[in-house]
Length: 209
Image (tube, rainbow, N blue to C red; front, side, top):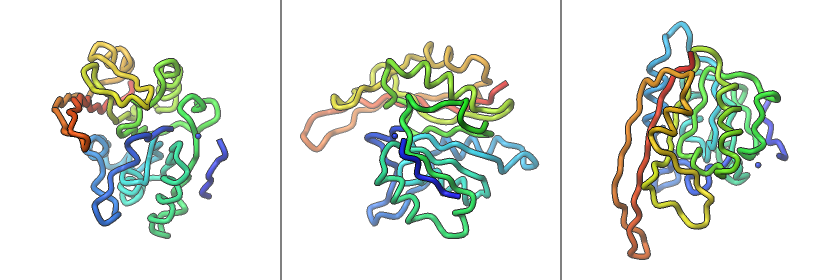
């Protein structure tokens, strides 16, 4: 059954990829890479999509016959996700309106996959370590995490209390995981106001021991 809990995970600033005509864009490459690493007999399973936005990654998981709990802090994004999901997927989809700091491993199932596409950096720095501890507990043994971190040179938007990480930080967070993919991309991006933003994105796929 689909639920929209009255409780707020932030895809703030990254509501999820859409094409110009409003259709969902392709899923993130980190998710596709993680799914390819699961052995066929072990998949599909149960996935948690943190900061799901309007659901590009959620739809990819459902198309591959996974069961999905899709979590976001934006009720409009979740409403859009629900209106765009094909009816035959709805029995395998649960949505929750939830904040990072409210995520609790004690109140949720464990998952074969936790996906966090461009959402982790929007967890407030003061809450991040506790939040990440819950993420680790939510992943089953031999389950996977896939998602993105912002590197230290990333130009954070002033309106968001963004969490940045060094590579040393990220490897420390991934203690207890086998890092299967880790790459970083830095580039300058012109903004509509003429300013320049420096983007530093670190993509990760890791398997829990």
